[in-house]
Image 1 (cartoon, helix red, strand yellow):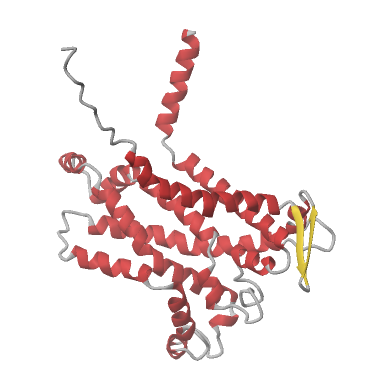
Image 2: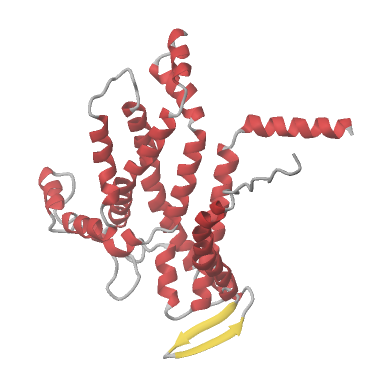
Length: 325
């Protein structure tokens, strides 16, 4: 036995690190490092005026100026945060409702809907179209002399002199409509995958007990979809608070990053781009402010959508361990 040679075993597990290394390298270079430098620049009074750069340490002064707490400064960040939240809510609330209904409809085995694959492709298609194309298309259709505006005028829904581009609710509503139309398909497919992951035997047991469609949806589907819903909520909050392309291309002033009419469709990211050319420190401070707001909203979703029973069980287990000690 001792004379026999031992066969060398090849450890293939180490090769997995080579496959995941590109992601971590790209994350460190293009995400983590810029995030760290943004926090650093937010503490500097870094301005650019007439090709002259001035850099001084300012501490929290950029944040104080950004919030309008300094004399002569206006809290534009809070105003643009309000604009962003209004357009995000106007997009996401109908999006999640429609996506839930479509997911339940397309995945219901009792309906026996034919060509579900075609429906899914049609629903998902808007998210493939570029934001620039969609913005130009909707701007042309809903301009003062656009075909849809003229049709609505002829029907009598709006007045003859109404202009979506000069109306605050009109512009915000159209931006929300574009975002809804572009992303409801992606949300629907995510929810369909969650519904299909639910054990069919649960629905069969509910049918035996005499549960109707409404009861199965609210008592089975929604509770078991919580992990997918949490993912959709958080990713939507991150994307919604960082919305830039549609508002910046749809009804923007030609002189800069000012969302018309009267700066009411300007988002936080547009404000950051406006500041970056002249006040880098303040732009970094607004970016940090946006990061904090996104983090707070994500934590709220985690707290409200998390499994309360699991948290309660963990607390009870901790109490028992302490009592045992």
